Length: 467
Ligand code: PFF
Image (cartoon, rainbow, N blue to C red; front, side, top):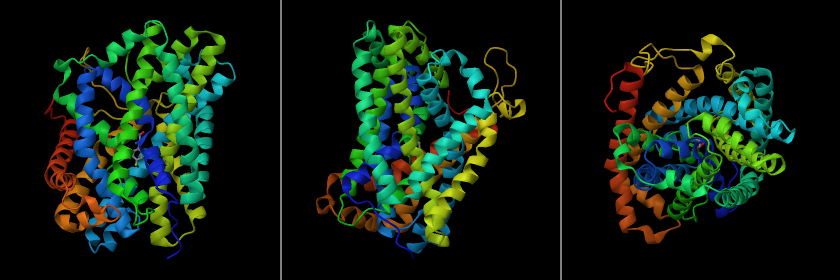
């Protein structure tokens, strides 16, 4: 086997994995989910899920990767469980599908940076038109995928680790600067109140489902991204504490993103409607209201932040299929990276066109049980959202469920514990180790299995279990 590469330092690994975790999920979807889900009440549920359910899966993925030093498909084979490499194949499919549409949203964000720098201050009002301009967005997407491929093609320490060491601290400085600015705006406290005042009556089954799904996606779990990164970590490193830092960094950045968003929106008396609208339509309105020079600077910095966050995530999404092709098929890294990136870009074209450019892709499918709440007419899901439902909402929890079941019951806890203790003798017999064992054996399979079942029944069969 050719040299696979490795992270040079513990910090490099933590930054790269935190880079994978911190992405569009933290800055794009987390804040408005908090707003919708009852502010601090959602946050409370979210934090519990991150630490009690996701963290054990996160260290388990890293442990499987580090033990085997292989990609997600090869990892299960090398432990002697060929059949379980289905988890790896499912992970490859998830990675390819997620990257195909994630790159489109990243392209919007990068496109906003370019537009704002050029003085196109009203871009937010033209969001709907901007995203249907497939040639322009396609070009930005091409550049974004190209940047991702360039980083991954340079290998682990020279590419992924180096990029993370530059991008993550920069991202942190930008978000801190923006946070300080946002909190000094008049009316900022109203935003903070909206963000943080708990309203426990809003905690419904739906909110719990959405919080766990969000936590899982945000930590890049269920598709072997952390098996892959873990496979480049040396045996003397403490993966239990590294995992805790990765989780903290991810939660911390998501939390700050909300502190940034709502004061900005409230200070300009703008609505808090959720989803893509909040970031790409409402926020630019807030930047415009701030005034020409400062507004452009703040707006550009914001979308640069979003683009950097997305880039360290697209890198990890591309690394998963790359490591598979390099390890299992002996293809050179450069060849593997550029061909996979091209294929994924092409797979993403229908998503690119499904934001209003092509009617049948925009209204791609009517999923059972999906009706317009007001008119009662059938509601249609776009191609891009459909891919998201398959990959994020279905494949990831199924993958996570299988990883937990595999680690606890097939590979067995003793082996998992042995790997966790490599580089951290103190973990042996500790309360934390006992908790990880318990969570991986019972809580994680149960909860992740439940989300997978709810998704399948709700989205694909129209059977509502939660409301
Ligand atoms: N964690 C990323 C985000 O929150 O945007 C998305 C992601 C990256 C999911 C890598 C899965 C993955 F393997």
